[in-house]
Amino acid sequence: MIESLSSDAPVFEAVQPPRRILLGPGPSPVDDRVLRAMSAPLVGHLDPIFLETMDEVQSMLRYVFETNNRVTIPISGTGSAGMESTVANLLEPEEEALICINGYFGERMSDMVSRLGARPVRVECEWGSTLDLDKVRTAFKKSSARVIFAVQAETSTGVLQQLAPLREIADERDGLLLVDAVTSLGAHSVGADRVGIDACYSGTQKAISCPPGLAPVTFSERSVEKIRSRKVPCSSWYLDLSLLLNYWGKERVYHHTAPISMVYALHEALRIITEEGLEARARRHELNHRAFVAGIEAMGLSMQVAKGERLWTLNTVRVPDGVDELRIRKQLLEEFNIEIGGGLGVFKGRVWRVGLMGAGSIENNVLLLLAGLEKALADASFKVSGSGVSAAAAVYSQQKSKDGTA
Ligand SMILES: *Cc1c(COP(=O)(O)O)cnc(C)c1O
Image (tube, rainbow, N blue to C red):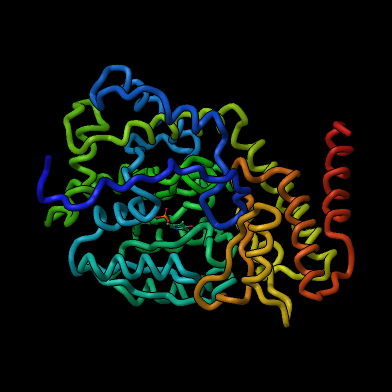
């Protein structure tokens, strides 16, 4: 009898979450194969079987990042841990870093850089557009920065940023290019080696379609050189790459206990990606995005981002005047079991964010969401101008006859 405890132990039911259709900004739907992998028996984090799994995860991550970088590992933690690991390792105190900001995640990076005691040189561009490259170039020249950071897939706005022009700007002064690929990796090509990205991070729960909990990262040889020649040790013990690599490298020295079940999950999610192939996966994401946009426009709604600058993975739809955006989202969840996201920052209340990522990017989801949206809008007395479902279905049948699969 423990006398100090006055009441009985609390008793709760086991969690029984519903199977939602996750079409928000993340997490994305996860294949049952991945969930099953998570329930496999635990082995030790230095068990030979687990070490083999780690090697395979690294090989498959190199494939999705499109890189030969030796230093390619999953960091324990969500995408933000990957984000913090790049700057914590690559920036010294007081060092300037050019931070391109055209959405919420650029802001987050600027905050992280300040907290690390480095100096963000903020290049603020319009939310919902790609970066103003002249502004980036001018700011880079004026600063002492040797690092440029940009977000490839801005999940807060739905904008896809081309990386090659940023590489060119960085090359004007032998700079490193750091890229956030959280919502692109596994859908849009990242091409780390082709583009010449020096450090890139992602998260497992967006286009990789795995639960949240790991952050794949890759570092170029140039980055590793910079880390090796640091004057001051990385301020984060947990994210210090030079320590982490003793575990993920040949030495296999204990640093922190790897989240075993998450590594199993990522292994299976990456196997699914390699089975499909990156190119086929990109085509699938592009097609479902295109069908969704056709549906949205047929209904008389409009996309926030200009054509040609849109992500396939994250679609921002303008909320029509007089419509309560939260009420529509609630109805989609309650009546259709579908989750979509609301706007962030300057887009709060103004857009819906529709994620079509990984296992979520399928024809059925697009058609169901358009049908649900049409019903919810009708209930909110908004008259749609045409059938979203028919317009999307037409895109699919066109594609099928083109592919000869109709
Ligand atoms: C989701 C996201 C992050 C942060 O990832 P978390 O897993 O939420 O920590 C960073 N950058 C972008 C672009 C994201 O979409």
